[in-house]
Length: 88
Image (tube, rainbow, N blue to C red; front, side):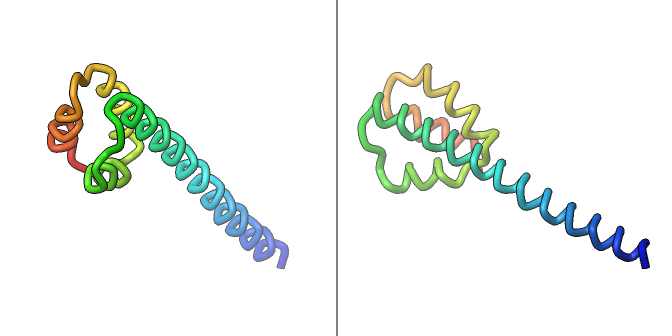
């Protein structure tokens, strides 16, 4: 029936929208992560693998907070202290 076709179409639209929204969010996180890692690398040199992994597992909100906090970091030790204070 027309109603069934409409409901199927609506389900398809919602599924597609969820895929697009998820992709956008993943893209924003990836871009934020890349920027934070580049900033830290430029300021303190290569990060230890565990530190980099700890940063990669953080949420986008935490990555944004880190991107601001790192402006006040004076040594690479500040990275570890900040990560411990801001768990994933």
